Image (cartoon, rainbow, N blue to C red):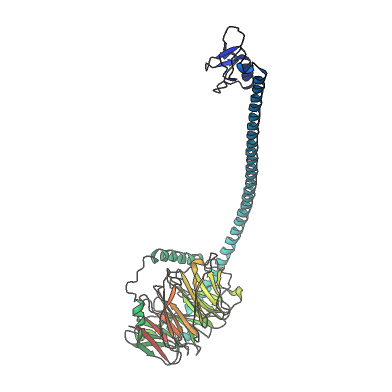
Length: 528
């Protein structure tokens, strides 16, 4: 009988009742004392599970390999070689176990470090959250106090403006002085703005421009009509609700309204002074807003159809005063609010329906502002400064979120694309195109520069489709196409030799544009 452990003939054989294997008694007893298991299967095994096998006692014959001294030496040599091989194998296994143990210890140490760092970050986050809650509560209390103060000021201002609700000339209204920059925008107003922004974002992708002229048709635009006035026109605006009407701000302080339908001037609205009108706007409900170098913003509401000469009869009139020349104004998409820029280093937001000042921006910057424009979504606006920087302000927090640089002199004009992607800004001879989608990333938002040598840029204007850009200079009109998938996005279409002070596209179909001459008292209308 052969032992299952030693592989040699047994002297005292025993049989396992669980597996039926034969073992040398002394070997299996030692194994059971040490491990308590069956050697071959690993099952639990006790001494009671062994059955002794009785065999005859005979003298074991000597193996043939041990019958002589050389054979015994060879036997010893083989045993020695086997022992060395086994020792070498054990050393290899020992080294492998050491490496595995070292790797496990390293992983354990790294895990402890990660856990310690996460615990530290968790504690820091909890502390920051607790501090933030305290700060938010303090800010909410301050905001409530500011809103209460602002409401009181608005009530006082409305009482003052109620005295002006009668048929008067523009000179009869009193000016509204802006309040402190610290006042945040009223929460009710901001809610209207936010709701309108969400609505525009959802519907923008659904817009179509079926009647938009092709670039080849744009190249064929020529003067189809002109309007003669008694002074040079510095500012133009095409009524987006009725593009037959064009408002014109003169350098003599007057505002004119021209009707393309009747081909005549409907009215001339006289100003308080002879200071030039720097910007004129159409607002809903037959409202015209103008801003002049005399530091006054005027709001005129016509009671009759503006295509009739009875447009000179006014139902109400408001005035808002800066301390220095008002360089630009922009109408919010809701049509109820405007933002103004001035050389008195302030940006003011007004309610043109109720005739009240809402809040001010940028006074802490201590910079003269030369241009301003609301973003098409109405959640923020851009303001150009005398040092060539375009600043982006958030309406809710009033924070200057971004600054766009690259222009060398004062930012004369700003125009947003209607799709909300791009902002163009120009100084005397350079136009910069900024991608607003890159403003909060590491990539530079300055994606294209247009330089017009020997030309002084007077006006830039995106059309309603965001596919065309007009750049008017002192001696030329430059027309460009804009495609977001194209690099660079803006490409030149056509140039027209004409001196300009201002340039505006017709909205919404861009079927014509208007320019005012810098050398003559004339306004030109270009179309096919």
